[in-house]
Length: 51
Image (tube, helix red, strand yellow):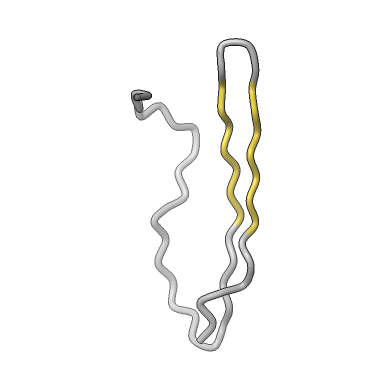
């Protein structure tokens, strides 16, 4: 199991906003650092939570 040392450069949550009648989407980036490589993962959500 990997240990989390709580050494973060950025923090973006949780964020709570009221958005009646709007749809929401998010973008995320995750970097996995191994012994000999670095892998970047990106994700953009679809619009959801409309209402």
